[in-house]
Image 1 (cartoon, rainbow, N blue to C red):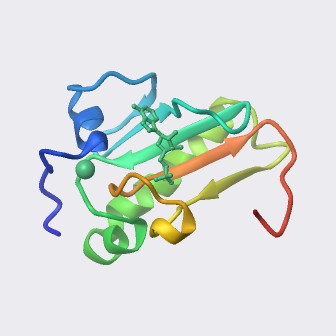
Image 2 (cartoon, rainbow, N blue to C red):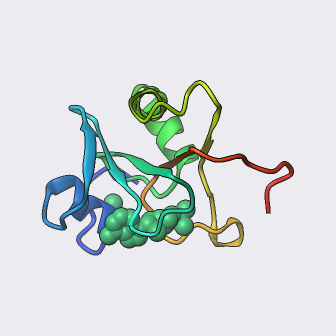
Length: 119
Ligand code: AMP
Ligand code: ZN
């Protein structure tokens, strides 16, 4: 849990450019790209360049980078003009909550209505 790149991690490979993605925003610490299987008109993933398995471990180890992820998630919503109608930032954490890629990432979902409680 050092933040070092993991050889078998898909999102480390997207962060390095080894695996292509539709990148919409980049900073020194984050990359934002469109989800390959979108669940809403806007569905963008924001990842830290450093590797941590989930949002909580990222925030504990590198809180400034966790804040960068949140700031970029909000910027994605502004870029896609979903901020006015509302949008959702989701951090699935653990397989039981639907996490499938164990590199911290924020889902930014917008462009349609959302139910509460979530499914
Ligand atoms: P989670 O299930 O919360 O771990 O989210 C992982 C997300 O990554 C899913 O919504 C997938 O559709 C998405 N995903 C998987 N592979 C890729 C890829 N190569 N490019 C973009 N998104 C991907
Ligand atoms: Zn990784």
